[in-house]
Image (tube, rainbow, N blue to C red; front, side):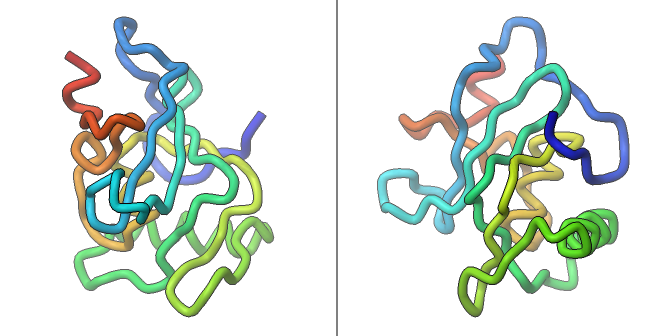
Length: 130
């Protein structure tokens, strides 16, 4: 089982959602641009951020303090390794409370998980949940 990080209730997706759907997020919001930086799945145990996902090193001032703490906890647990000047790389899968929490961790600023995460065809999570 993946280690859990973050504060709050770890929520699974609605029952109608297919938890086998692979999700991605990209630097520019376009999965076709080749700028995918993170991979995830949403299951009953929480939002699973998959190994080899990239996590922004520097947050904006708008960054959620709880997300910064989770990032520090992951660094202290040895789960984040230097990838380049801008990103860490995640060594193992980790479980996070929600898609939004994961998106904020990955991108380093406040962002909605429902529009940050898409399937491989570029369909937003908010549409996949309908």
